[in-house]
Image 1: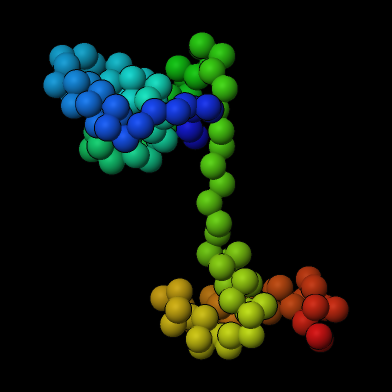
Image 2: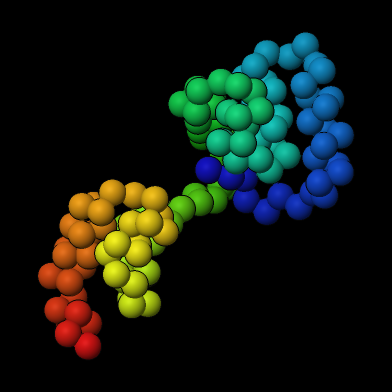
Length: 123
C-alpha cells in the first residue's frame, strides 16, 4: 500500500526522514508521517525495524479514518516468473536454476499452466 500521487525528491525525503527519526513522536505517528512522504508499508517497516503487520495496521487505520487515496502495488508472483520463462522456451531445469527454486515446484507450475492453456502448450 502506497499513498497516491506523492511527488517528492529523494533529497527532500532524506531530510524529512532524518527529522522524523530524530523527533520524539510515537512510533505510530512516525509511521504516518513516513507514509505521507510516499513510502510504502514495507519500506516503513524496514526503516522502523518493526513488523510489517504493525505498520500495515497503523497505516490502514490512518487511511480509513482520513479517506486517503492509496495505490495497491501488486508484485509479480514467482508463478508468473516461471510461466514467463517457460514461454521463452526455457526448460524446467533452466528455470529452477535461474529463479533459485525447487525443480518440483517449477514442474508443477508448468504442468498446471499447460493444462490450463492447452492450445498454447502445443504451439
